[in-house]
Length: 374
Length: 209
Image 1: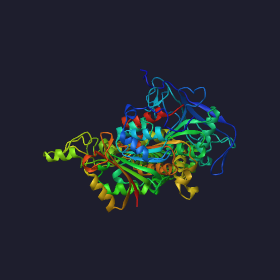
Image 2: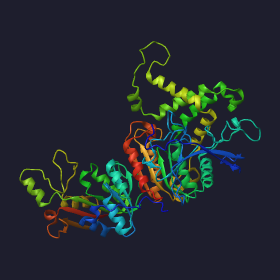
Image 3: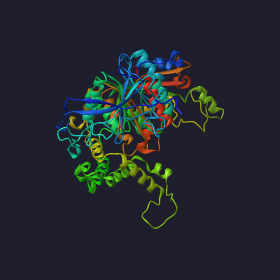
Image 4: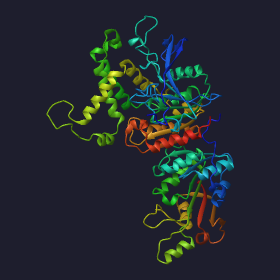
């Protein structure tokens, strides 16, 4: 049955960029593809475009379904559609898969034109800055000079922030959700454990596992299991699983607790569909992002060039991207007398809350986006 | 395109109604100045100051419903609890910091006044005068005062630090706070005589000594 507030059946498109892109690392991508989706219609003066930036494991498939019998819609479908908080009757919404991704945009599994083989380990380490530069090229490709808004949660929020720093004239509003101005040592430490799980998997083959016809499933699975623990709060895990057993204690190391079978299920599912090289690069991009670094670690100084208005949102139970980190962003904007609002949502779900259809959270986004002029 | 969320302002009925306290506050706030309104509620005062004086305003509000109303009114609004202080704001970074009819509900009263004086070059504090004769009359009759300005029963009131005008004058003296101006009103009229007895709402314009 067709939902009345769904964007409906969608299809991905590919933009090919034949010009070389010099990355922050100095490496050059001779050419690349970005796969993207759009929802709603671009208005005559092209002033209603909203870019959605994805987080660690996200894709360009943000809303809608590929076919009527698709089991799941896009990853932020609860937010985007006709009359939803990000209303596609008003906005032209763009979802894009980032460079280095594994859902169609050029990444490690793509063919390296120089060798005719998969890029594998040779695919460069990409950064938030590189993603935003390539997204700006996609905006050019679509004929969009200025975005009404850039929206992102977590790593996506970092991209929204970076847009306002790299292209202050090209973005009117940044919605930075459950994000941070950089990662703390503890936060980076989780990424390091996840990467070590992948890199030490015998089937990783130094990143060139494609040639061996294998994937480092075990490493990817453990990386994802670890990630899932950090995306949930203790309370949320307690409420969801507690100490519940599937069918009693058997004095074994099988998945006896429901929490264990959940983590194993999530790990297996992810290992079957995600690319290990992409996971390494996404986590590295998180680690490296630090816009204050070249401003003597003064975020307020880094934000001097910002012109966009900001909505910053955090969630009380999010310990991986805590409210305190969002307040640092707010302070840097206040120090520069920028237009900023900040909401701290009382939520039990931890970091995952930014993807949940919490009524108050959605009302915050709806109220803000209603005010955005196009 | 204007990169602010402050357009499309919905002019609420209450803004069109005459509010004497808003009028006095707007006399104390400079045109185009930078204003922080603590406990801004639905953003009515900020909207009034923005429309009348083109101030650059920010509200601070803890309550979810008020936050939404404030955003809907077109104001910048920062969600935080005033009891935690104003650590997200730099020293002397605002022309005026306002605490409108919220002082009496604060637990850390001394802290918030000191924080306001740190962040604002000037501070405006308004509160219901507990010394108002109608309050005294209710006490004399053996009951806790309930009125339009104090619309709560003793058991459900958020007001934990009610004070009189004389109390607040003494507070300022003890804390070496300069009173630049004081205005006392009752039923939208300024009270010039026996303010602590005849005044319903006390309004102060303050500065650190």
